[in-house]
Length: 218
Image (cartoon, rainbow, N blue to C red; front, top):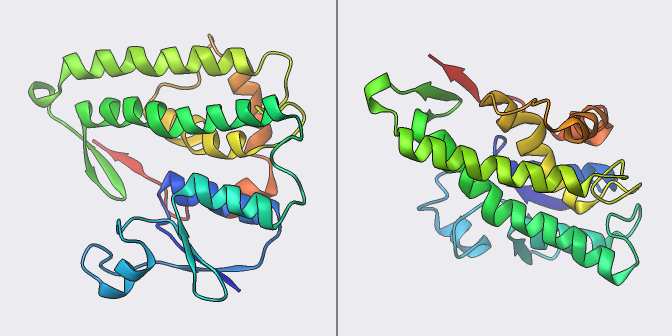
């Protein structure tokens, strides 16, 4: 059976769990202990990051996007990438830019006003807030949201009628963390709101969601 080494609150672990649930692939979850120093975990991933998918023969795959691509190749039903070559590239672009750019802006927005003390975000004192970073990251986030809103025009999901790897990648920020931070919902993004309402009803979303999500501590 496949093993997923993961952290429950990580959006990257979450998106892999969601694909495993969508495809109904049997797997077990492993929470690594002291992954930054453990020699055993170093053998799983030389970068010491989760998630890591451990195959039945002991081989490992890391980086959430690569893991999900592997799962799509190895377990093609239900498909989470379209057959059309351009559409496949479009889905991959959405997923890649989410990981590379949206999360960077998201992280800056969070760091500007909160200390990270899981399972809490602890709000900084007024004189400790980095207002310049807060506003610049807010602008970046809304640029991404505007682009994503346009991607949903005429589509039920980012994959069109298909719940795709792009939808999985965007589920954690659009349905959870950006709502926690007060960015969403926003009346400027009605298609994202409708998309979110569909996503949170999916069994794969409900089953894979963090058991103890982040909360804000004032």
